Length: 574
Image (cartoon, rainbow, N blue to C red; front, side):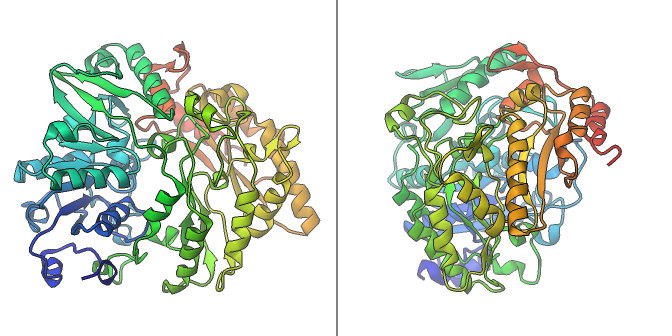
């Protein structure tokens, strides 16, 4: 059958209905399977399918019984692929207070408990036990962000690379279309492991001592366990390399061997980005879920992703570590085709819930001089101050909005993703001639309900550790927001998001935040307790008590009760 004629099989019966006598790749995932580009499993499945491979998916396999879900489709011709789903399984399961969540947005009817803790490791160990000779390739958020020694908040200890704990053969980090296709072609062609190890964006575990040029050797896992400073030093190198256009090969010794991280593919071109979306997504949940509601799908089913990457460099965020710092944008034509096709989706009433990306207003943005970007080692193009080489014009984005809104059947295109207001505002005023028109159009035409922004804190010393601009910039934003809405006769509001218990934040800092005069009269219930997640600067600060950028001590509130007080303090008297 042609690719557009079927949904990926998830059972032996569905495979037989397609008349297949073999499967090239079987993907195991901790999420329900939804054939939408917002879900990585669908992206990889459709991309491999586009290039002629037969792909089956086993969503949320039962790991507690006789393991029949892992056996039912047999062994694939090439490899098993494993991910935990759209989130790290531990973040999915537990709150910042380490309490078990009672629902799961990525499961039919929101039912909790349908994936294990550390899902990638659990699934991989089972597959290697049942099919020891079949390669297992791990990827997605959980594997990508645990590719090297990392702090695990839930066990409160350092873990080695997930390659060590899982026993996987290969790890693909970051956005996986190009590396997964290259690996599939290599295995299909019968390449030996030594040749495969030269592929970009691949990580693997080796015995012995590393050999080769352009190797950047980190402290070993064992050194990091003994010395928190060594772990902080490692992370600073890892993060710097991850944000460079031409990084080195990373080597991290562990046990009697080492983990090797090959440099990634270059940022995807516009043509490559378009090709990733030029596949026959149905944008629907698999038919096996008929009559059931999947909450995560409800949130994104009428959304359109415009680009990948983020150069904001927030210290608590993992976006750049997974998607990269450099913005990779789709063409307007590709986006408009997807917008037009939304009219074919059942229930679409003309309202796009989110026309955006990790940071919605970075679409099309890049450095004026690419040569300077090629040698840059900055983590953020915006902190501590915007890079002079960064072109912050919103002209292309405004033009995209106008084209989208002119598509037949489109009533509204909302921006549900986050925005960076330091891309169009400074404390002195608007950045360029496109800035004020962008903010005005954002507020009046593309905001559903209240405008949500994330200053994160009011105190500069805390913002330094978060890597966000001065709160004075939010004050300026609120002034402009009030002016624009008043002139338009609109009664709407602005909602700021804040974070409590971030490294560097004391109880006194939260008290000052709660009493800041610039917040008077605002809708205030968006305070999130900081959760340390793998591969972020903030998590390294939390574990080590050191700022990895400077190795200077940082205050960290670790006491659970005092963390609760930091969060609840904000609401006293509200």
